[in-house]
Length: 263
Image (tube, one colour):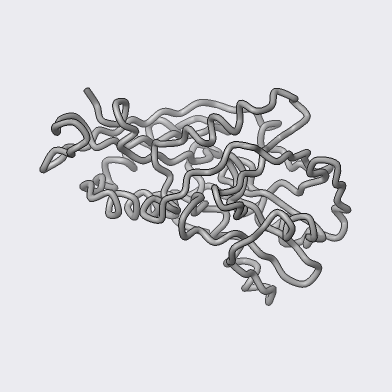
């Protein structure tokens, strides 16, 4: 049996497709290769992945490319096979333009009771063990709520079930560190780069629920949505005009820029 199915022994990437090409292919491949190094798996052959991705993306105006890499089959129990022979699965599905439209009026967000998994050796990786996010997402079925925020077992803020979180205090951005929990998102990295290029401070540090409550504004990021301003968190409403809207607009545009190389 494949170890990805049996144990979640593997990694995945979710990549936006626009006009027949993946967006930020290089960033996604670098994160995937970091994951294979951390999990002691052979890295995939980039030219093969690119050839297969090209065929899947061709002719698709908007879509999502899912790239899954497992350790393959074999091994005794949890003990991995040596050497391992990874399996890869690539899938592409079309999405509508509306699914990537900017959320100019902001989104509604809630806190989740389910804690995020805490493991320094896995922090940052987009690995196949996502049951904490699955349980957190099952806490609500209100279509008006776009996302849920999660904390680690010690109460430190990690981010959303599928997004990274940024706080704005009127002068600087802050995002949770990814040292023991969370995913090192490709758009998260883009925000940090572009904010600093604009001369804005962008800090990575441990955050608490109180820090979030004290923020002037919040926004969420991932490869599919780009950046979502948060209009409401629970009963707290935010004035979106106080966010760095020029930066958010730039991130949305860059996140949807197709091509095999980083913009």
